[in-house]
Image (cartoon, rainbow over all chains, first blue to last red):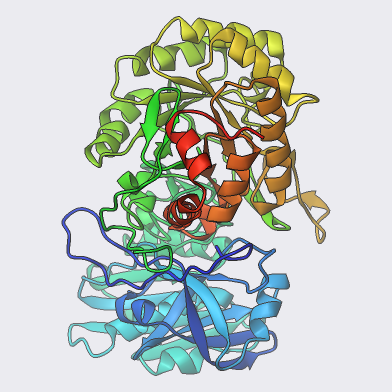
Length: 276
Length: 315
């Protein structure tokens, strides 16, 4: 942390191939490559940082640190895609931190740590349903990118929006099909019911990220049909890398860290009754 | 190698150590309790690079901690109410402590309890362990019994420390809360009970509210404030306790995020320091502070010499 005094610049390391302990790069300064508006108050930020772009797996996130040094805590954002030495984030301008991010433009420095967290497990073959709600869609765009080009899978994006369908085009570059719905038309369960006749239960994997009520409904829908599912959770975080235990969720294995043990959890492990 | 280019995994021979309660820390910088978890922090630096690792609070049985949200931001700081979530002393002895010792860390085990009996149970088990030092947490603001309720009452504090003192020969640190009228009074109580060292300060009670809902952000309502915002408060506490207890080893804690911050604590009378909130926003901060302080001590031989002799800076 450099806000009081620091001549220090952390050196960047690539992960060392040592058994047991990973060597991760610490906090560093990336640079904004581009920023564009996707919808009213919704932005896509592209940042140049090789360790994230080269190592991130779908479902992982990065911590961004506001350049205002009095706002210490990281803002965690799901990675929405990688290309070359750059990665994309999508966020909504909601508070002081994201208002400051919205003012960033090409060339500006931005401190970050990552990639962080447990990614989606994309080892299964078959159909993947990428079920996203609102600002929960970024990791699913990454998942679509991760699945693209594989001969043994089909990726179907089912996105629900409050109004503007800001991510259909982004996921559509990678997904085999994209279905979306805005709040006045219905929700992602409407979409699931519509495509259910084409699905084979044992060859289907649900990946989901979005508001808790949506994910709870998706979990129930998947549970009734015995479809395997993975959910990416959001929780108010402290450190975002597993040290502080601020962000926890109740699971069948006890109270786990969303940032380190997640953010992706298998649907069957989550205690949806107590999830907020 | 210097503070600009240090490799947090490269073995490094520190030139300036500090003797705290008879034990030599290879440098005067440790982690502050609650901000270190091995499987997370160990991915960012070699834990043996630090003077000491102070663990999360260890309780006699597993504790679930508080409901979420557990944290909120504050100007140059943060508020947390984790509530000492931990898997209990038996798990700690089987799993975490052996791993820390295998990595060659000097381990300060932080001891938590809801009652005198709780603290005694944990200390009894740790007395036979490989833990290098014990740190009695009588200052956590986020649990309803024990924690700060003991640490704000000099009579209860002295009684507890005396009882624990009789159970172990390991160096025993008592971690003090700043949420008192006169921290020198609780410091004296801990000393009279037999503490070998004091660590200060724990967090200050604080809260944030959500202006859209009018409700507290943290589920526990209040939490503990940490970060650079509390640095001057912590310095004043260290200064005051140093005046009251000239020979007591003191570990200074509160908002340290650079070597120069750490140096300020040493001049205020601390024998060593611990880095807390800074590590939550820069995973390598504790090692960076250690390297920055190393260079600052190169130019301050009198201070460095005092620390090596187990003495604090004399104003």
